[in-house]
Image: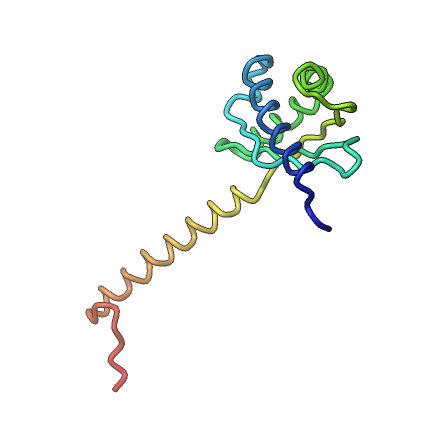
Length: 132
């Protein structure tokens, strides 16, 4: 489906305003360190899915998502005062595993490179094969 410029602008504006509202209005310690990675509003703007991530553990991220979903009505009211929209979407927060998976993959690659260079040193060939 084609991404319409208006919808893209609304998603960006929702992300910016939600980040500000979460920082300014919410004091729940479970949401400390959580950042919004993506907002996707439905075509009719009735619903919006907000992906969030954290550098903390998966368990802490799950607690933060639960806290944000509990605070969704407060955030929606706050958006109503800040945005010039006829209808403010219902908010649904979800954990964004993409950044966490990318970090895990990066660690695995780094470990494999270190392990491979360690094996090359043990063989004494400097990492080049001498199959000839």
